[in-house]
Length: 161
Image 1: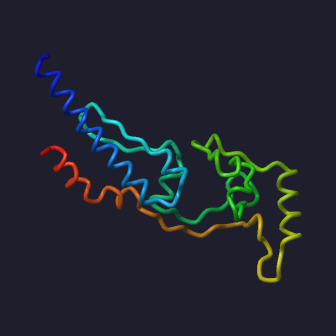
Image 2: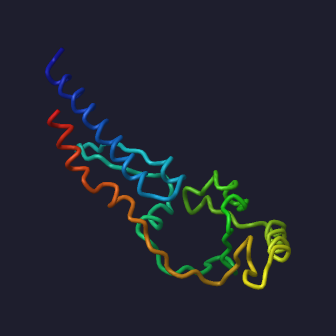
Image 3: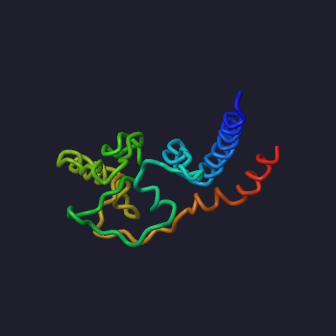
């Protein structure tokens, strides 16, 4: 077997161990099961290891975001329990791109408001579906940065082996 092929195989095994470890570490630093399950790694032509997720909103969870107000809608709508949100299949079908975002139908909105009225208490007027004009900023989890901390030491150990 030519030496070049041996080197490529060794390099592939090294990247495999480092990439798998990087994904494991980053996944362990986020609260989102969707992000945890969607992380993957690949190498670029320059032998740079890259970790990605297909979800556009991962950057907001990672880095935080500023205040949000409706753009094409009249109100912002959030569900207290993501499993109740029909737009995301009960939490199993999150939008990957902005194009994938869908609005509630009139029937879904009416049902949510009806459930809110039925469950409302004096302290909590929107116990099921939150309807608002504005959402304040949210801090990021910084799961990429925190997960990658110390990976260089792991990589050096793998290469030495």
